[in-house]
Image 1 (cartoon, rainbow, N blue to C red):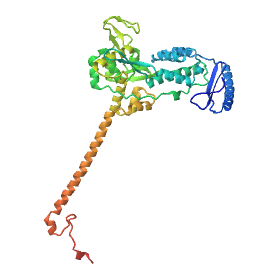
Image 2: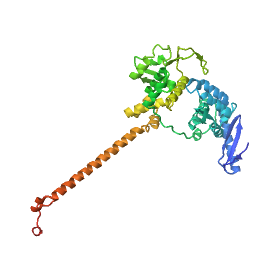
Image 3: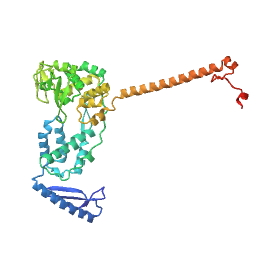
Image 4: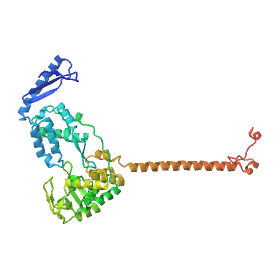
Length: 416
């Protein structure tokens, strides 16, 4: 295909293939003759690039194979299990047989537009009917643009794949709405306690104390060190961390000893049945490890019964907010949450203490009122003294000034 115009642009475009590699883009020219000259130059560059690819033993990779390999090497070993479904949506929309080097900015734009039409579950109404809501920009960024970038970057860096013109990822990033920080109040915790099973309540309390994410809080006994009073976890991004235990957190873990040989947090099965999700067989009265899915399911049930609208991640926000309120130390909160950059902590928590801000503003206002009242009181005293002195007959008989209390000189004496 030679150069061609497109609707909505005044520039001519080029699109050609060399040895299976596709090259396309704008010539930035408004004249067809000039555009053809640009195309000729682009073809020369493309031939040199394909030649270097052949020397480096690189080869084209299709999207389906790249997604399968990325999931086997990266996705399946992480805590982001929902990424497998997201990969499936990318493959459905773009196509398994599409080469990675054929994925352009136009391909990515079409992918995002299609993905934004998806809906996600939003609970059920009072009649039990499933509710749905549009997918958020944040989720589109994470499971579409960001995920595809991770796949292509790994293919280039680790598998010798060649992508001459990767999409400009940043310009496709959707603007995200910042979710307000939600702290679970003490009264709300008490309401949840009344509805929650004791084993799950202990897990929730431990999560609030440590600020750990739900994927890290489900500990195994080898991670617990009672002698040093710490737990060792691998957090988001595969980063190892050592979390100190408070006296309450220590007591929570100590009380769970002997419940299970491997899992720290467990629950007692209330009935004999088989879990449809994982195929686990449960026998009534026996203890089993709490799973992430079980934690989420029980949390939703307990909060709904308690009349509290909060997410599991709000436990982490609660830990951070309370620590910041008590210490005023943002860097300490950064260490608690395991953020690699304090800017991340500041972005979320520097402005969350609304009540503390209000209290500070009230103290400032009260201090100003006290200062004004003190000033007015002083002026009133001065006025009263002046009136008393002016009305004293002794001052008049002695010929003194009512304001200075000094002898008055006659006009005659004052003249030379």
